[in-house]
Image (cartoon, rainbow, N blue to C red; front, top):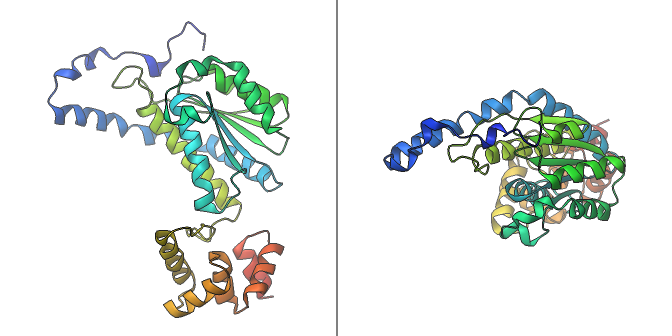
Length: 301
């Protein structure tokens, strides 16, 4: 896509020119109808997303990291996905990282000029000291934003796997990366406001990517979040429910197992299902690299 070509996400639909004159409920119906097209657009990229998931999981199994890089809404969505991984999957905060043009202040305040600063992208990527085990995903609705483009190029030069996630076909971002995901959502109801359908598409793809990677890495047991960090009352209650669901144990046994394992859900499940003490559960999980199903097989030779 040339710099002079207007991306589909930026084009103006004449038939929507009078949305400001619509009754509120009709305006909302229009927006909702457009939003319903996004999952279908994402579905068209599932094979490419699957290829990315498998490539990222293979690298993370060797100790690699997953890094998102974007500007504005795209950058914030990457940061959001990254910060949700530790409480959901028990990951180290350094394992999934979100880079945003303009740095931490840009998460809560607009820093529009920062998206053109390729030097900032290069510096942010350099600071991570990427290796071939790492993956960097550049995220941009248009697919031509300078910050994620420069981040992808810098990461590729460092030997990391690179992925370009855009919402237009033939994007410069996908072309610059080794693997591309292009979810074509078309024009926005509010022309050019890519926090709408494009933002929704990016959120859906990042949800798929990080969740499926963690499933492949054994950080779930079935559809249970067995690596969650129970850091508040809500999460402690969730931990109890998960252990009970996985084991069928009563509340007293669940509380006893969680207490013995220091609140670690996966350890508690293993100790109950395999009838082993907490230290043995911890050892088996270490040997199985945290994969609960494999630890259960080891406990039942």
